[in-house]
Image 1 (cartoon, one colour):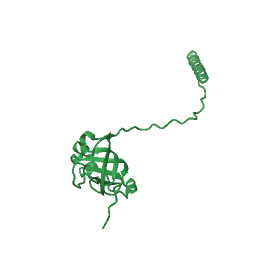
Image 2: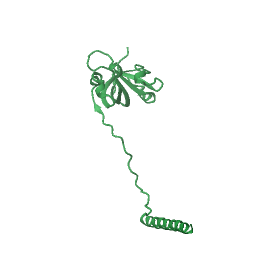
Image 3: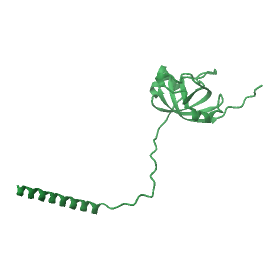
Image 4: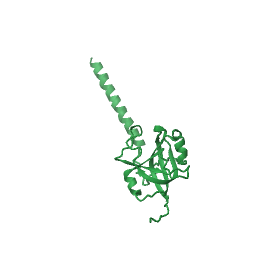
Amino acid sequence: MKCLKYIKSGMLILLSAGLLTTSAICTDKVQAQPASTQTKPAVQQQTTAVKAAPIAIVNAPSSYLNKTVLMNAKFDKFSTLGLDYKPAFKSSEDYISFLIKREDTSFNIPLSEMKLFLKRDTAEKFIDLKTDDEIEIKGVVFSDALGDAWVDVKELKITKKAPETDKK
C-alpha cells in the first residue's frame, strides 16, 4: 500500500513538473504585442442595387423579391395605401406610404400596384415634396402579396423639382 502511495505522489510530481515546464516554454514564445495605432476600416455591407423601371418591377414583382432596386420616378402623393395589411405588414404608426406616377401612360394616374413604404421620421424630411417632383428611390422589394410590388424604401432623393405652377 505504501508503495502505491509513493507511486501516486511521484506521478503528481512528474505531472506538475511537466505543466510548469510547458507553461515556461509557452510564456517564452508569447511576447506582448503593442496595440495597433491604426484603426481598421469598418466593413461596409455592399448592396448592389438593380436599376429598374417601376413598371418593370410591377409587371414581375416576384423576380425582384428580396432584391435592392434603384428606380427613378415622378412623385404623386403621400398615402396610407397598403399600411397595416397583415401579409406584408408595415405599421401605420412607423411608416407612411407614397405613390409615384405611372410612366406607361400619358394620363395622370398613380402606380398603385407598387406599395412604397418610408419610415415616418425619414418622410418628415420630405414634407415639401410636390406632385411631379422627380425622385430616385432605393429600396428592397420585400413582398409580392396580391401580385403587387411592396418596397421598403431605404433611400429617397429629389433629383429635380417640378416647375412652379401659377395658382389663379
